[in-house]
Image 1 (cartoon, rainbow, N blue to C red):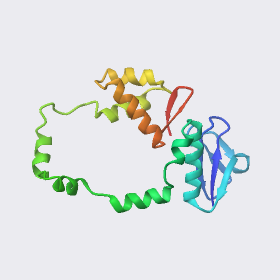
Image 2: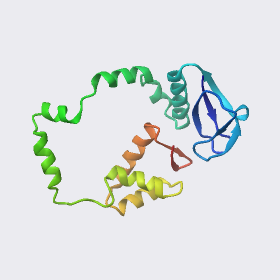
Image 3: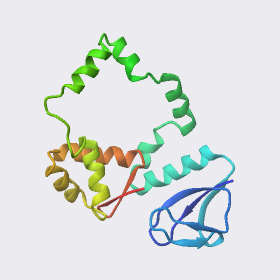
Image 4: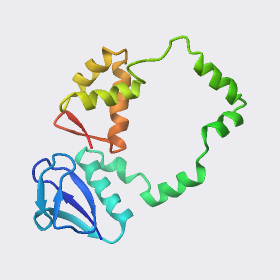
Length: 174
């Protein structure tokens, strides 16, 4: 059995598989008896439970219509499983020499970066800053050479993928 439950402390929604005596919120750590948790849905179908939770999160963010236009988890999973091409196969099909590309990467004149990629810098801002606003993340990333436009796009993608959430202008990792 799968259940979508909510936290009365921080309003986080998550999936529980099976049933235990107590549950702990993965976001804020509050512990409650299973019976006292608000259950929005109980079902035997994991895909259905994920679909409903994702829909609830999209509606919270004002993206319910966009979510409705996306195929179900099961359909998306089938589409991805059939169409995955690994990097080497893609590069070879594009007419590029994989060995030459790897050698070029090793000879990068910029050297190695101690701060990481642009995406890693945005993710590090979310980890280092306590419930940051978009402006705080932009400032953090800007100090490390990442443009505000990139930060905005990265935050939007992380929100869409369910890796972070935004509430009242503040961001958190899920």
